[in-house]
Amino acid sequence: MSYAGKNLRYLRKQRGWTQEEFANKLNVKRSLIGAYEEERAEPKLEVLETLSSIFKLSLDELLLSDLTAPKGGSYLDQRRKLKMANDSNTIQFVPLKAAAGYLNGYADPDFLDELNTFTLPMLAPGQYRAFEIVGDSMLPTPSGSVIVGEKVNDFEDVKNSNTYVVLSKSDGVVYKRIMKNTKSKNKLTLISDNPIYEPYNVNSDEVLEVWKAVYILQKANLVQRWDVGQLAGMVNNLSEQVSSLKKKLN
Image (cartoon, rainbow, N blue to C red):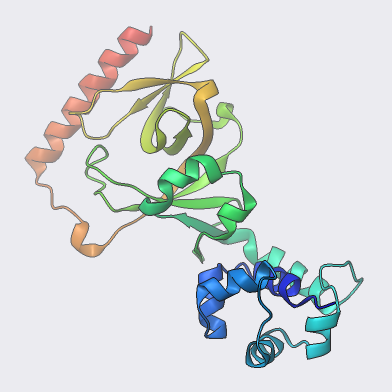
């Protein structure tokens, strides 16, 4: 019995590579990686030799050993520990084209495994994810920006007026400021930085994930230039909007 397909999938996940990234490293098509992992095809000798070189494993180990089986102190255990140590700042990136699927796949390890990842050296250890945003509701943060968020596991940790990426059953992925509703703990008020957009409420039981924004990444040519008059107008409008909202909530 050959364990090639099972081992190939296991080794890929050990390094945190998507099928596309792995295919590029092995110089094969992505569809072949899927065929190997699903055991619909056997890897050719040159693919096995490349695997052997990357992971420092013999051909016998790749073909005849089940590398997923626990082995105390083995190479793979060392790789696992190393990966866990290095993954503390690994950021999974949810691009716009994956946002619709994220609503169904946010808790699916296989879906998340196919997302590209990157790291930022300035981040403290934690659980991070990055989301590409679209639209002008959070101007001056432009459409196409990438919001790097840290996972919020308890609504009590949400701070009023801070910015968050919110995943909800009704709206999917949105980037907003949050105000806690003083009249009802079951509602959150989401506010846009662009004052032409009205705040709206979302039921807390509709919220699936909250990520506190810690960094905003954007292309240099997307950075907008604002004059003092524009900024003052936006601040005044936003202040009036927040004051009106507080009166309604109280």
